[in-house]
Image 1: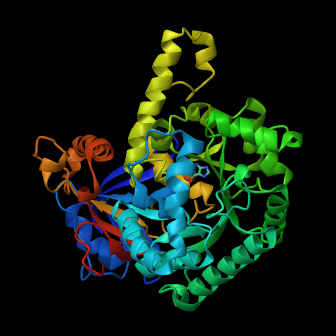
Image 2 (image 1 turned 90 degrees about the vertical axis):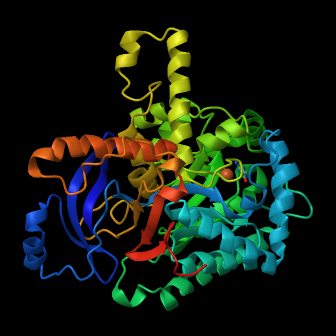
Image 3 (image 1 turned 120 degrees about the vertical axis):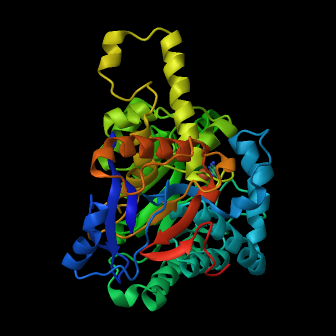
Length: 485
Ligand code: GUN
Ligand code: FE
């Protein structure tokens, strides 16, 4: 690939590379990259690396490469009811909207039809890595894993564990049934990626599809089930874990009533050994300071789901505070608590949420001295931070930050080719683009322009601007993808 690239680096910085040359090898990893190659040096640099321009993709005016998005929390079986039931708060929404929809995945043929559409939608939205909740059904969860595997997305798939406080038509009959179905799914997913991953023979370091333990949330699990899941986790330190935490005040109160001895919501998961590096906790809107400290100390990650938090009136998670405390943070669509399948929607609402906290704080008169200790708390999240959360931050929640989330030799090529083609869909500008292969003296202007394109893309772009989606070097989706449906 030769052209503009944006490369996230830290919570507060990314590199803008107007003339980047990046080579992807047979394994789908990035073989080498040269950050700045002048057009007249292109052939020579290719030759130095023993390459030719035979397979060169030259980016056009306004196009740029971006690492793929990481969605750290979503529910594949809730896509069918996306955008409905928005009058409810969490617990009523689960009872009236979510559980009836999820229960339909008892029907494996329904699951096959739905999950094809669902996975295609997430890929085309630019999500190259996705942490999926399936339903409680083993067979339908396998179908989701098959589909993610077949379509070539990187994903974590978990079967919900729920044997308590769920409707009679949608509940697991016993701890042993829940655990044995979970073990079956883990084994199934691992055999799937060993047997037929297109990259397996080529030594891809990470299987693309992996299992993840998924106790739905404390309310839907008995202590005995959580304890058995903790045992599974202890035997298998590589397993990721995902669940919900402190989303809604009624949920928090009920959880404390069910588990009075745990001391706090986070304490429930901790007492069963479920808080560790590789645990992803969604929402975290109503945590107490000791819970935040516990989460930080355990290396646990938080999935910030701002669209859902607005939509179900859950509240605004204090993500600036989490960042100041050094807590790992990523973004999650939380479909269909959230009404969008795109991480760009989460970038927008994370920005709005941070601005709401900022002006609420300003109008309530926070002291300047107190403010200065905090880099992120109650402040608008800047673009580099939002981009980081959508890429490297999410990768870090999945323990994949050395594999994905940015471009570097040896990392997987999980990438989006962004195109402003079709300015009618929102990526407005002067229409006069300089930045395609700028001359040496045009570099600064080009960088400024690419920065503008990035901001426009994140805030007014949509999947029509995501021209190609690559996972592990394989072209798997995007607007001009014609590979398969
Ligand atoms: N808590 C338990 N289950 C769910 C769910 O499906 N969505 C959300 N947003 N919160 C939950
Ligand atoms: Fe959720």
